[in-house]
Amino acid sequence: MGWLWHALEVSGSMAWEILWALILGFLLSAVVQAVVRRQAVTALLGDDSPRALAAATALGIASSSCSYAAVALARSLFRKGAGFTAAMAFEIASTNLVLELGILLALLLGWQFTVAEFVGGPIMIVLLAVLFRLFLRRRLVADALRQAERGLAGSMEGHAAMDMSVTGGGSFLRRLASTKGFTAISHIFVMEWAAIWRDIVVGLLIAGALAAWVPADFWRGFFLTDQPVLAVLWGPLVGPVVAVVSFVCSIGNVPLAAVLWNGGISFGGVVAFIFADLIILPILNIYRKYYGPRAAAFIAGTFYVTMAAAGYIVELIFWAVGLTPQERSARVVEAHITWNYTTWLNVAFLALAAVLFVRFLATGGLPMMRMMGGAPPSTPDQGV
Image 1 (cartoon, helix red, strand yellow):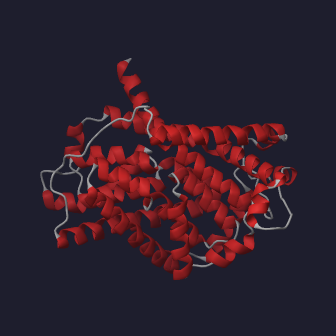
Image 2: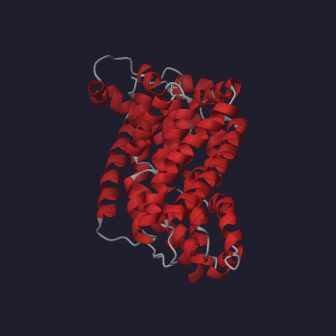
Image 3: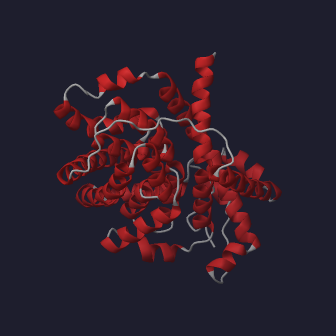
């Protein structure tokens, strides 16, 4: 059974590397839903103007979330009044323009990939904004918002019974520190996890299997390494496809990106692959639950086009300035639990999650979860 244990070990390693970011992302999502006033989000991110997109990008960089958590937080912003384009820009920045991703890329693949990611991220956001401006219809946004307000289970009666609204005044910090605010955050945090954890587990298991079982020779043939010109054209097109079926999310896709780079994928293909953590199959299913099937299909199509286009543009820019890396010597390693910064962060955030879970149980959360079937509380006026 060594082959199975190897795949599980890889999956566990990926989960350990992203655990603290997952908890942080869902905590931020809960804070936004419970504490941030709708008017504040609408004023900052309420349209698709350059100012709103710049603010969404900055907030995404600051949130430093994993892709699953970024998607949940983007939905929270959208429900609070953010424009749909701004919410999607937040997702891109939150998963692709963060410091820990840049550090890991530099360590495993080289500094050129870090630069490429920070160049390609804004390019993708601009391209996505253009596509949304051309093809996104108001009716689709309205349908997506109704689904987002309805919640994952689609039960308005259940949501009414689970209304966690806090109506007190005062500053943001006072609302955040209030007893009622703490309770609301704990309920939303646990219920968001209850709704999404199956998708996360399935994604990590499949990612571990691919990383452990697919031989390097397969990748070399698949990426057309014997035909350099075709390989450059093929890489950005197929990179997102590999990401979609590999289920690897956020920072966890960097080790697999190292495998693909050593296997022969083009430089632009690696960039497109890393971007594509936002359209892997479990997340596409989450989009369907959050926004409905039509909006999910629109997101998938526009994201794929912009990811591939950003890969081509980055490849062209780096070729023009002579920065495209030539050696395929990425470090392919498997993470192990050691007393490094990841372990300390995981311990700290697990303790915080435990506090929120205890608060959730102590304030009658379990019966609500059973009533909703695991869906997060989502009333249109929820929040402090």
